Image 1 (cartoon, rainbow, N blue to C red):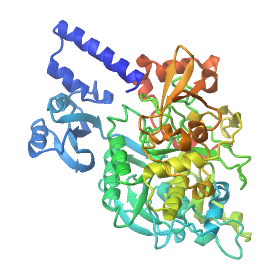
Image 2 (tube, rainbow, N blue to C red; image 1 turned 30 degrees about the vertical axis):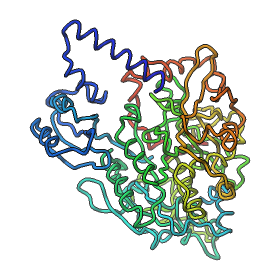
Image 3 (cartoon, rainbow, N blue to C red; image 1 turned 135 degrees about the vertical axis):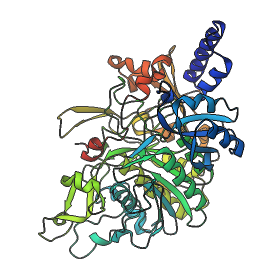
Image 4 (cartoon, helix red, strand yellow; image 1 turned 45 degrees about the vertical axis):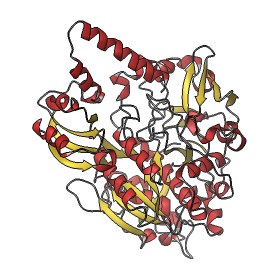
Length: 570
């Protein structure tokens, strides 16, 4: 599809031809190797590994028996992606891959989780005044569980755990409760005659479907998230689930067309669910020489979903002084060069519902909110109700709540139409650059407000509710490519997508005036994204050798590092 993919396949074909000519490799072993993800190569043959096997069709009894004959133990079936989770020895992987019905094999990878000012900042308070509360709309929160918080009472209508060996749906980690409060907290425990601030979510009457996929340490796996997404699809009509929030992610290991996590979010999207995903918190990561570009996490790298970056509300209710959070991951996506994020929303130092005694609360007592902060009482003790967190994990539920409001207003809208409307109505007014300083290290970071940093703009709930444009077509995020002749980065809409309709969805309208229309594509001068002193970024993002090198693809151990995600940005 993209130039890098074609070049990679071409070079792979040439290598195969050479090896076959030399008699060093058989056709069957080459075919088997193609079906193994890069991070499965080189494992000791005796090493035991959990793998997700995707088949070309629903696996038959013969397919499962063939894996068993290779010593594989079936742990669970993954019906949504025609797959299954197995435990087996690494040395047996090629034997499984040799099955013509095997499509792709990847490890069961680990995943981690990544409003007093934020609600009015995105104009959700105005929506509330006009009765838009998300009432009747179900939002599935796939996270670390949801605590029975007074702000969420009687609106967590379904709970289930997908954490192996742990059936509890409570929030031992503390992340999911905070996310749930941003989506749908009604501010019950911060409302009253003594209140200074009310910590209310974006859609305070929406239903929450609690699908726990992260454990007490905030860790999970592909298979847990895939199973949770499958349950959201199954319960769609039972609880009117229209939105799924994924404030979690992991590194990108292969094209989204092969990634099992991406395959499942696409299935949810096509089933009618608006899937909202955190972009990741690696915007300061320069380990690839890209100044934080090409760090979008999976499954936020999928072109279907709404991928959300983080802004700082600066502790005020006005939007005019808001700035980019320097830790927010930037696009384009690794390997496929999809234009991401799609939107940005407040995500820094957000106050929301707390799960008392949870891991996060114990690890970061400095993030506790004093009772005196939001009430007229002089009690300076830490609140058991509210806690402060930062990260794109907090920005994503802002957009999930906004989607719930739009769907309450116009329930017939498709996920593509919701995505397109939120993107078109997002605010396009930004400074050209801003500089943020890490409060702990003193290191300064510069943010450029290009479309790989802010996407289509800053979430504006009230503008979205007042817009009547309806997109016709898919709203897949476009593809970026580097034109070496012109020295420009071209952004091209997917054929048949909504972005090709210049009358209603003109590209300059959606992405602002910082980009120029060049025929059917957007053109960005190379100085917009990469200055001359960071030309190495081109090699990483567009160069075939480095992009497909193992060092780059999984250069970081955790796409949502806790220290950055929680301490925030100044």
